[in-house]
Length: 299
Image (cartoon, rainbow, N blue to C red; front, side, top):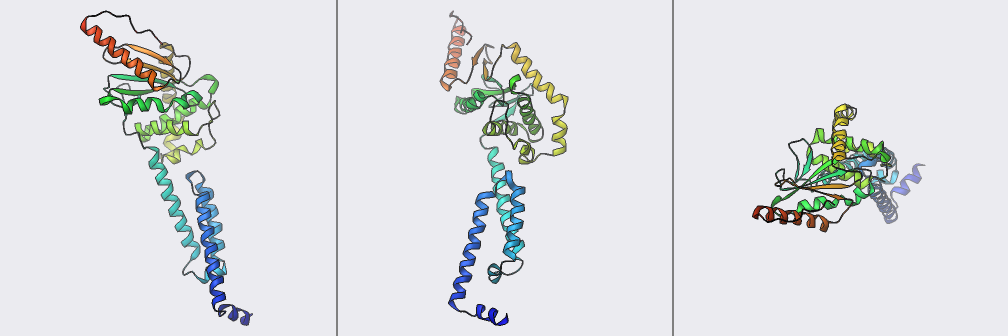
């Protein structure tokens, strides 16, 4: 056995090539596993896999021949560092674009200037496929409006045929925002829309949302069982019923100067809202100048 080991260690270029080939294989294995498995959703599974992989590498004679120190710990620490960095980047990306998030005087979540002249009061169901399709439109209107002229107010309106997931989704957004603030509220609703299968099906990793947003789990659990959160959702639904809402999305366009409101039903395009707002401006100018004009019909 000693003779065979000495011959293997002193076989010149052949052993060098064999050693180098082994290292290439090891490196290839590492990067393949990094690319394939390191995401926040599978971090636990990934860490288990890394344990197995690093143990295998630590006992691999080819890898051991070119390594110093404890290879198992070094590999595990290096890959965990990459995984943590990736997760941190994903968490940061969740909030991207929600810097205009606020709360209004009623305690409701708004996106845009609280004192904007026009408000898009949007009744939404997080399990509604049409709401999912519509989700970019109100934000685009606010982001492109001149001098912060428009804000967007969210109101919950979970439909009965999407229950119980629709109300749970609404509560998740409320309870994450309770700890993380208005930006988190909009980030959660956007995240839910991006991942849900809609129509009351939700998505399989929904329970990972608290960890993703780094909230206190005990406080979150308490919030999810709170009657206050249920009350808040019901208040939105009652306000919607008074406004004549019977489907989602429904958007009440309000002129906060004149008090006039126009209902826009369905996932309407950007141009529809421009048309409604321009008509409201024209009407208010006529009223100011003393001219009479037919009122804007309800949509």
